[in-house]
Length: 480
Image 1 (cartoon, helix red, strand yellow):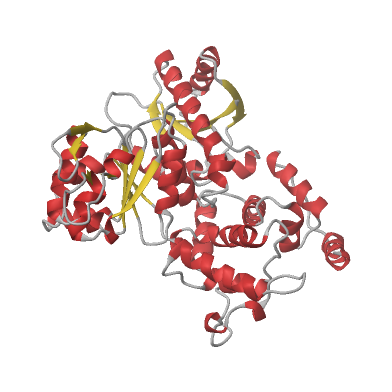
Image 2: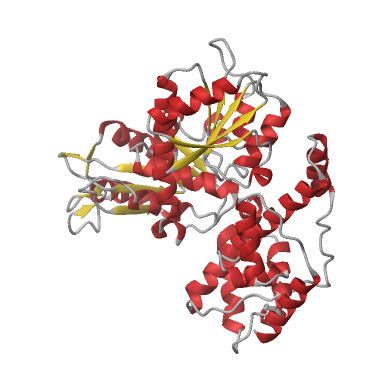
C-alpha cells in the first residue's frame, strides 16, 4: 500500500523537512510518493491516502485538506512542523475539513511509527467497510455515512465497549447493531438477542430481562430464560432503551455493573457476559438532565455513542439506496428510474428516513410492469406532486461560494472546470454504483469518453469536450 506526501505553506528552504520526512517514513516501512507542491488534488491528479506536511494552519490549508481527502473520504494525516509542545494551531478545524488526524513532526522516528500504525488500522477498517457484509447491508457513500460506518466497524472489530446508537426512527439502528455483532471478533461469540424496551409489558418486564422460575407467578408453568441469560457469551441489543421506567433502569444498571442476575422467583445468582448495544430515538442526555433517565446507567451504556444521520443529512445516498431496495425486491435485473422519478426521489422529504424510502420504492415496484424503467405512472397517486415543482438552481449560493473560494485561492479557470468535471464524474459513478454505462448516459458522454476522463483525472490531464463526443453519446443511447 502506497501513500502520498503533499507539502503546503512551508517556509522557504523547508524542502529539506519534506525530504527528511520521506526518508524517515520509508525507513519505518511506509511507502511514500511525492507529488510535489500540488495545491489541489484536481491539479495533481492524485487522491489520498496520504500525509500533508504543513508549516502553518492558514485558511488555504483547510481547503487543501478538504481537496486531497475528498471531504474526508480518503485518509489523510496533517503533519505540522510548528515548534513548541502545545496543541497545533487549527487542529480541530483541520479535522473538520477532512483530516483523519493531526500530528506534529519533529524529525523523530516515533512520529513515523505513529503514522504507520494509524494507516495500518485505517486500512483494516476501510477494508471491512468495503466488504460485502457491510456495503451490501448498510448502503451509502456520502461523507456523513462513511464516517458512521468507519466508527461502527472500528468499535465492533477492535473493541468491546458498550455502544449507544442514537438517531431518528428509520435511520438503521437495528442494522447497525447487527453489524457490530457480526464483526465481533470473539471466536466463541454467542447469539444476538434483541429486546424492544418500548413493547415490554410492565408487569412482565422482570421476566423479559431476568427470566423466571416455575411457579414464580400465576401462569409461570415452567422455567424461562430471560434476555440476560440468553445473551451470555453473545450480544444484547436493547432497542428503544429510553423507554425504560426508572425502576427497571436500576435493575439493568446492577446487571451491567456486576454481570450477575437472579431469575424472578429464584435465589440462585447466575453469571452473564455479553456485549451491550442500546438504541434510542430519544435525546438521552436531555432526559438525564430532567431526571427521567439515570445518569449512572447512561454513562454505562454510552461508552461509545454513535449518531446515525437522518436521510436528509445524506441526500447523495438516496438514489443508491433506492436502487439497492429495488434490487433487493425484484432481483439483479431490476429496472432503472427515469429522470422524473429520480427528481421526485431526490426532492421528497422522508420523515420515516431510510425505512420511508424503502416503502416508497417497493410500492413503485409493485405497480411496475414491462421491461422499461420505472416511470412517473408507477408512482402511487398519494406520492405524486400536486404540480411540477421547479428544479432547484444548482448554480445557486453554494455553487457560487465554491467558485469564490477557488478564485480567492488563485485557482485558474481551467482548473475550476476540471475540478467540476471530476466531481460530476465522481457523483454520477457513485449514484450508479460504479456502472460506467449508466453514469456515462447521465453525464451525456460515451462510455469510452468517461473512461478516458477518469484516467486523465488520475494523471492531471485534460480531455477536451467535443461536439462529436456528444453526438456519439446520443448515438449510443439510440442504439441502447
